[in-house]
Amino acid sequence: MAGKVSILGVCLGHQVIGQVFGGEIVRAPFPVHGKTSSIRHDGKTIFREVENPFTATRYHSLSVRRESLPPVLEISAWTEDGLVMGIRHRELVVEGVQFHP
Image (cartoon, helix red, strand yellow):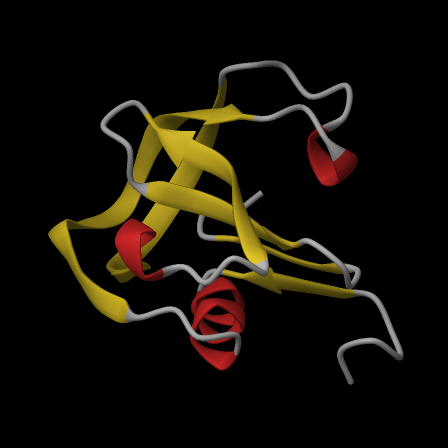
């Protein structure tokens, strides 16, 4: 579907995007279930005109490992401690967010 339709992956969908394009999914440093976090972002595409930082709800125990991301994916959002909260494909209209909007 990538390249034929725009894709937005949320939570597990975000992790799937990371893995499909070559990233590694690992246990998060600590599980975050039903808690809010401050999220920072790059201000591009889906984050255009979104407050920076903003507060979002998280519910996950896995995450995309930052160091494993291939060059085709860029980090678009992150927590204050650097955990990946958003990824974007550099050529296709494919984005993922780990948090729940």
